[in-house]
Image (cartoon, rainbow, N blue to C red; front, side):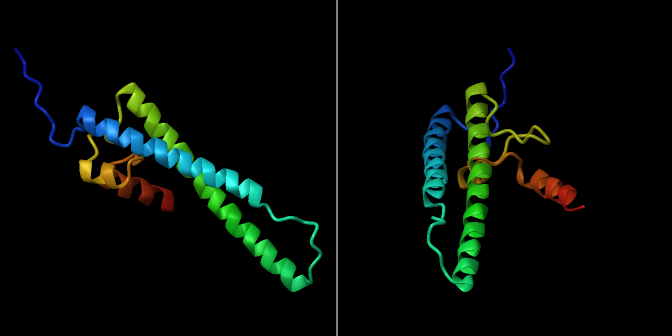
Amino acid sequence: MVTKKVNKDALTAAEIKTIKAHLLELRDDAAARLKDKKNMDMPDNEVGDPIDDASKSLDKEILFELSGNAHKTLDQIEAALRKIDKGIYGICEYCRQPIPKKRIKALPFARYCINCQHTTEAHHMH
């Protein structure tokens, strides 16, 4: 009889349940932020002076930046939720090792363990 050695980093079903609930909250939050962005889009009917226009376009850029991040976050959250459903959540996409619990709890949609995160970031830099 082979006893599978329990990895201390592996998440328990209860922990996964908690994380999934947290991810769903995060997803709703990101989705709401995106919806707000759409509603907040600057009304163009106000004719202002050029300085006013400049600050408006800056606002637009900031909004765009925020919504860009919200989209990215949303994608990562959806991916994490899909992994939970498939039973492969908490595994580094790069080295296939379990991501340490501390990291998962701090960043529930982490795709890589900390070592691989540095490796992939280093690759993206070049």
